[in-house]
Length: 561
Image (cartoon, rainbow, N blue to C red; front, side):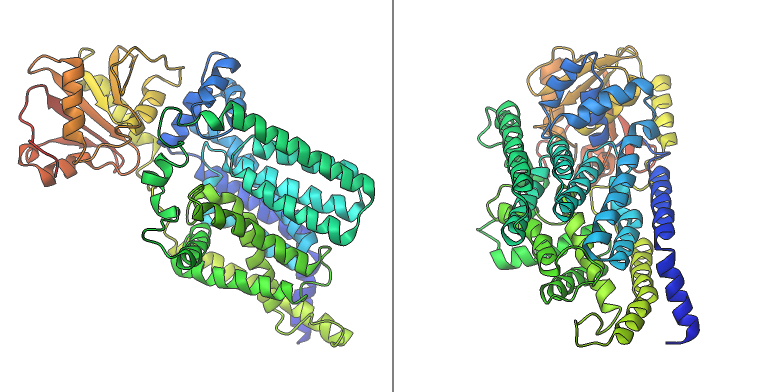
């Protein structure tokens, strides 16, 4: 190694802490930019509607209708008092996402070494899909912040034989369980990991007792959430909401189907799909899945960083456990597995495994144990810093330059706040108060948020499988979420007929169809499939807001395409 290369690597090592602070700040700025300038998507508007209640008690009752625990709704309920702009509502996610990056870095640095920690921080701060998760009114980054903190404090509790750190671990884990139900899966992984450490390390009895008490508290919390919420989801249906709507429509391909899937192919393919989703690029995702496997193999062979506090083999086992739990639950048709945000908790083991591989492989044959001389180990350890960081930076650049986010999504330009403002101006200028506005359910959420000017929405009595409310003198009628989350050519004619039969507008009355959200293309879809709509005129505000006019009594197609 040349003197110049040695100096460069030594400089990188000496300034690793400062580099981590700079990366975390860049991650915060990236999230802040992503959270600004766009209107809320339907899921974000739904979370705000649940939280936007006159009292905390009503917010809790509203939260029970969603498939998530209530903590985030409580937070949003109080947060909205200080403002309701898109950026302000997304700010808790931005802050939580930034906190996650820092706690993940702190944990990975102690578990696998400073270089692995810095590489991991580079990925979680700037990978576009992870940044996007941190820029929405959703629970995921709050979940990740709590889980990374729980993992950090658990390792610290064992390293320092500290019951107080174990108590901090318990608190973070409980908060994660109150934030998102996928935390239950990560909690199970942490339970197995901690039990393994207790058996192998024989910590003081008081520490083992503190852990056992924390597990009992977690089980009690899980039982409470199940009794008060989970058991009631999908009440009256043949299956629960998680196993019904999600598995049969929304995330059908993320559940194992024994009629069509081979279990081994399913697990392998969907495991690589996890990495493709997190890295946002198909080819890179496959490569990173291979890196993860390499990282686990390196750790199982005991060749992790000599500065790591956690045993290499123990770390390898921990990285595998969350994947094993998630995959097993999907095989049992209980939880989705693959390239979806619902497995966001796998960001922690996935990025950690990739980072370990890059840190170790960058050094070539380094850190193989006592067979190497001290001078060789020192030289190769220094050499790996610039090599490892350069590889990670190239991977990140490829993901940013060639990445393709998963559906459903809206392009930033089409989701511009200006488009929503222009669409609302069109409504006020062209629609009479006597005109109905008929929408699908995803539009109900978004339009209600903006047209009602972020005020709590009071639903009016409505026929079965419809939702109705009034804002600014206009009546908005929505198909229920079970009948039409989104309008397209094969369900709109039927929903239109249901609307006419339920509301009985007079022949010739005007009804406006407003669509806003993901996959909005109803006017073109109708024109393509039905001769009755060949001359349909619509207004577009970007690609994700469409408005057109219908007339009660107009000719309609006899059947769906």
